[in-house]
Image (cartoon, rainbow, N blue to C red; front, side):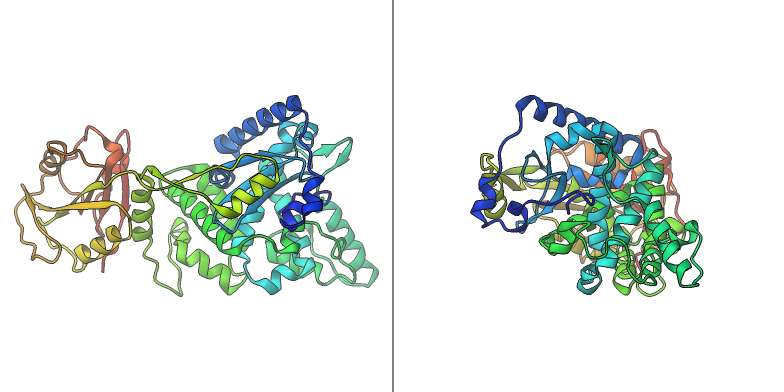
Length: 455
């Protein structure tokens, strides 16, 4: 998606086989490129520290961030090989400065998330909806980042929500219709869309305010994968106490909830309603299972199996950059210790659920143990018998005294026993059964902890 109403995307991104368009690409001055890269890194740091967890996570997944004159402004490209690229015109970034870059990067990240949430082709094909997205994205950016629209050579870059609202008021007023107050009009993405459709001639409805959305060159499968990964990562951060992540996710949820069945399904699948103390009323959300897979997956380092991504390689070559090999696959087999508390009644199905989840993660070998006052190895499917007190120290000793070091320790328990302080708390994941004590996340440093509903 290209940024703003002045963001005309050039031919290389609209049609990669257009050789004549590719020949028009030319490198920028090295000093401008270096300054643009410095400003971009500073803006990304600002976003990650205080302004937008979503944008920070998204751009961490854009492994190639390329300064190029093949775009007039900036664009996030979701390519067919499953990766995202950030392309930015170095002269444009230098011209708008670090605050303008921060605004543009937020704008781009929000567009990709909206593309994931509002995936209905008919809705995306409506130019009025495109305009509504531009308005709402810029309104949220101005509210979160402060200031005004970025300027280039004294001219604002992008669509002004207030200017569009003014045109909306005039249009309805001339026909004797009653417009909404700005706060009501801008309340949600769909409220802006609905009200703009009341106009005779919505401003900019026939122009490409966001070329990539209208040209439909973004690979939707990649958008959905990246968008889903970003939202899940931000949700995990919110559950772990990140206030910026929680506030931003709740704001996005409020603005989009109920817009379409597809949007509600995505939020339900993510389990995002847990942030508001409730789950989706229409579907069962096994949030802890997705959380566990994500956390374990994050512990797997990328390995040495090299592949050449053909589509991304073609784009990089067209822009004058050397082709790059991608590293994929786990570097080595990862070892987990999965400890189940048998001191009391263990809900049925827990072992089977965990066995299935671990099986979804490539390169994982699980060491299963049951514990009460001591530790007893077992295989999934064997009957569990236990009794007596609970001793977390026994699990700690078992995990830390192994001949082969472990990469993660998963403890399924009600949490009621003397706390422990593992030597490597970052490797421990605690799954607390209903009614249990979540003390691990209150320790310093806190350990990964989540309440599960294994029924």
